Amino acid sequence: MTHGPEEVPCLLMRGGTSKGAYFRAADLPAEPALRDALLLRVMGSPDPRQIDGLGGAHPLTSKVAVISPSADPCADVDYLFLQVAVDRPEVSDRQNCGNILAGVGPFAVERGLVAPGRQETAVRIRMVNSGDYATATFPTPGGRVDYTGGAEISGVPGSAAPVVIEFPPGAGPLLPTGHVRDEIDGVAVTCVDNGMPTVLIAAASLEVTGYELPRDLEEDVALADRLRKIRLAAGRLMGLGDVSETTVPKLTLLAAPRDGGAVTTRTFIPVRCHPSIGVLGAASVAAGLRIEGSVGAELAELSADSDRIRIEHPSGFLDIESSLGATPDGLPSARRTAVVRTARKIFDGVVFPRSAETAPLSPSPLSPLSPLSPRSSGGQR
Ligand code: NQM
Image 1 (cartoon, protein in one colour):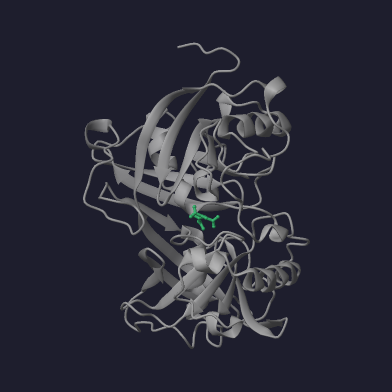
Image 2: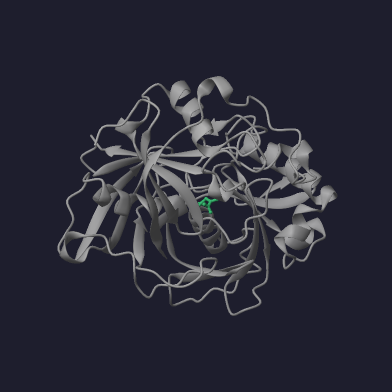
């Protein structure tokens, strides 16, 4: 099939608890500025409702995966993740996404980038944003991706085929500040990066329980202000520079488990409170809990004889396997991380981006949905 210049082949997929538009790199402009301008028009940003595009008016449904064959001998495909801001004209490659990652292997088979196995297929993925690797294994009976199955993940109704994702140790340090604990604004934090830069904070140290509903936490303007200050300082300590306009680091509030898991979490991504938890965010939390002396180690209930850690979150739990080793100079380092996700092919076709001449440069002032109150912290991210 041939497509006009403003008709872009696109697969709309759910990856884990997120949803996004998946593209072959070859179908998008190679020039990042042109690509990003096109993606804003595809998703309908900037607009709090994204009414004129594919985006779902929330950071977790305003995501893009760009996939291409990899030149790296350790990978089959390259996966570039792009976060499309909802209410700002901004596309960022500063963070990775482990939920959208769940759809990358199936997409690669759907688009003929990887030859399927007869029963299952393992796709080696280079995550361009971080330079880290993952291997995703999923069923392909008879050489076709089978999305149906019995795997259930909290935050997604029903069940689907499991996508098993294995992460080898990442390239960067697990403790980017070089310390197990830092103190910011009078609050003890542990800054950890096992795929997603994350700041761990005991909920009680911010005068919340950590069991609140995400909506209630999002409406707490004083909490948002404290979190923003902690995040800006943590970003500098983690070597990320000025993070006022970026979506990393994330912030995870921790409390003792209530439902048989290892810990309860409320994660800010970084302004909206996640209805569950990101995959790499959970990988960072899990690793952080295992570090002796960390914020969280004292709250967590960990099993000594299993790598599996059950992370409780607002809509259930996420099980993750996490084991640590040590660097030659004795600092903790990630050894292995693995997780089960599911993915679904929702729609396959071409997307017609709004024409560049009529696209908005700033959000619609007349949206009937009021944006979140803590706008001083950077809008709906
Ligand atoms: O941490 C949300 C998500 C994510 C990212 C976010 C993710 C991850 O749930 O790997 O999956 O933290 O912005 O999609």
